[in-house]
Length: 240
Image (tube, rainbow, N blue to C red; front, top):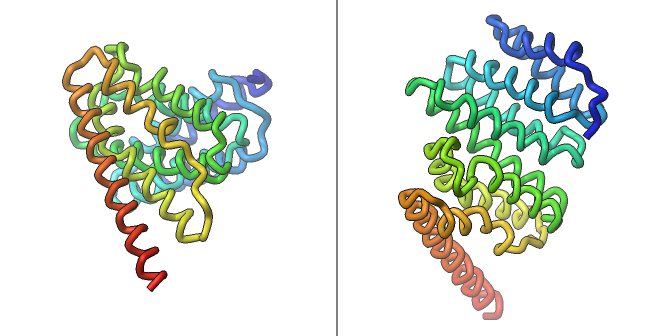
């Protein structure tokens, strides 16, 4: 990736994102959205600096509605960044949150879980907007396996792994349902998108992680089965 964006341009921006005043933070997030949508590719260092600023921007949000609104804004940033830089952008998100996670107190955990959920939703929406391009899907799932769902890296927080298991297929189903509601066909290889959870279920060095991943896959199989039966029933009714 390009290193054309310098530390001098990004570092003050980060300070604005983590400002005490909500108005200053809101302006910085709006400016960031414009910035990343028209910027050349950002380096890994730049992306980590931006997500460090955004992590503390979210840290400063202290009211439920404010947190909910900001989680939507931050999660949807992946739709604004140039497509070629979207996966590195998400990689920096996960690296930042895995690194900073142990510094969170219990009071803040729930709001960060909400942010993780929204990022997962918008990550799937990004993939759907690009017609579930197989190369994009593989790059995304590989990023998860090298990051928060790494099967052998003990430094990755298990609580993040567990939360991903809890919401992964829920958010995937929401995005696919949106496509169906809009009359779009879903061109997605389930084997590809399930890969991170399958790997966690078979290769994780943590038995609890393996057990939870297997339970997640079993629950997802039930959802798929119910949806298939519902679809078959709808077809039968149409024929009648």
